[in-house]
Length: 598
Image (cartoon, rainbow, N blue to C red; front, side, top):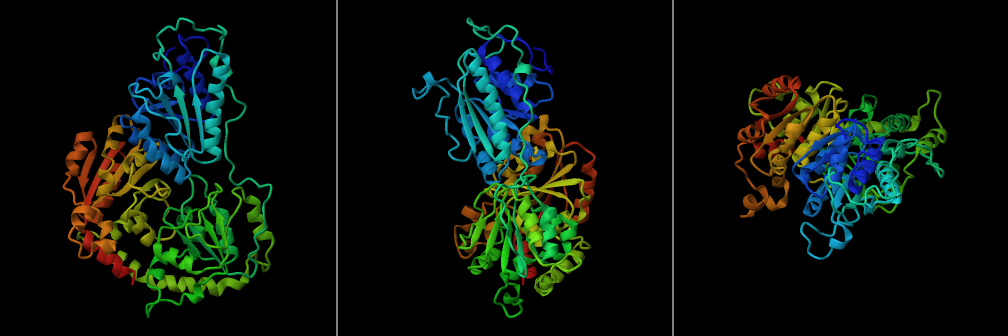
């Protein structure tokens, strides 16, 4: 076959080439647009087939761990599964962190691992480990295939590909297909018995045709849509993170407006950036509960709701979580889109709402008493109490950031987070927020209505694959993508830079370098522990300019917020990877966080 044409009639020489062509062509027909492959021998049939299919991009990534997170980022930004392909042995094991994150963040991902045939299992054959079930319970669906020279085997390849896309899309999670190939592996090698019972005019394209690509309508009406009555109740909306493309911002905002319901939204949730909800967003909820019980703090009694609507997971604020846990018997409805239990507090009155709940929204609106203007008049005082409490801390922080932009000195980390929120071009920029202090500063200080697309790995909340995931997001976006990260998160994934030769997009890394894991300064272990610096803070001396040069990335250093803004503008028009380093004082940043939260 020549490159860039559809797999058609019998231009094949062996079982594996034909089987892989059917499998990969079906994936493409079901909506998959990118295959991320890592080099290896056993996966040769799959890699060769993916390279031959028109309109299926094949991206080589050397390191399987980076490949897994790159595909994860692609899935987040395109809201469609990417397919991962690797050889046998420990190559598959390196996908585990990305598979875990995909399951916990409910991101579609198709993992295809090549394997040795059954007769080579459990006998210490080279590059052979038990791969069936290697990802434990994290895949939402699994399938093991042994290609054979039979029409039934090709039907299995087609059904496995279709089901992989279907399950990954409908259940919003990773799937695993393990393929046990026998020799010959190279498409050019003739197999003695080929084509066997396969007809000589077998047409792959025709065989792989499907009536409709699998898709998930998570807002479709459920068969058992329940009625949730909010009439006359003080409603509080708490929004954490949701799967890619699975937010229902407009309906949630309508409920908030109808019932004057305050919104406590994580910086990663679209509600935080939805302009219509700005009047009901509570920006400094972490500070409100951080200061509970202090003489100047607002009365929490006035903030107590009658019912809580939780959208997705809980926000990361431990002070908010502690307050929610103290509410005891308050009814909580969990809207989580995938049917998971997202009640991390094990509250007795928490109830999982059916994932498909368009009719539930309608029932909420139809079963309440409203005034002639369409709003519920009873809860204005409840919302006012929340806004007053928010203003207590918001006024102080707003003044700090306004004055700080005029300062030509080294910025604090909260200033960098706020600057990114307020100075990125509206609706034209995606930002990937790394775990650690960047996401916490965004949650604490991101203002309502900041219009950018936010991405994150908040499923398992690890720093694994930070750079690789951001590269995947940027590869799938048309706009410039910002990676906002700390130094340890970036160093943990420097192999992601190996993607650079095949990266198509614009990723600008904003690196706040405070010389180590300064998030641990906020832990009790940081006080009077002689081993703290060595074992927790882990200071590093990496030269990021040399790291950037080693991988061919652009590098620049910013000393002030003004310089940061100019560099972001400069790199906006250039494709590739750009690294802007801005050194910060971790201890000074910790101090200002405390000052703004009291």
